[in-house]
Image (cartoon, rainbow, N blue to C red; front, side, top):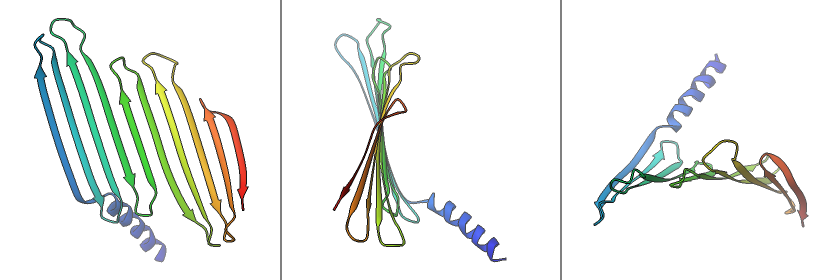
Length: 177
């Protein structure tokens, strides 16, 4: 019977962690027409929320549309940024932008800190950058993962792994006394 209570408690905690106790939203939109008839429209939204069990999420979106009169060459650019901070201090951030030519640029960063039973810590930071020009088969990725393990005696072991388009290009490990 104890296993059933643990299972139900796990479900309740996972549901509660996704419920926001405080939320703030703001939206704005501006539209203008210049002397040549070009329409410019800017829309922006920003959302903030705090989870019931801790943690914080912030999300910003912006879109700019430029439509010259009669020229059939409407362009659109967009920008999104999302930051999540979990109650244990782990942080993740994603920034995505798309230019008028359709090239998408995404940067994802995360930091995760864990403690072990012996009293040491392991901090892992990951940065991934993706450049995807409009078209097929031309996406490029670069990723750097850095892990720093701090032992109880104060020594640190730092490992860095660099990847380009999924292939390991460099891996280094060094011990810091």
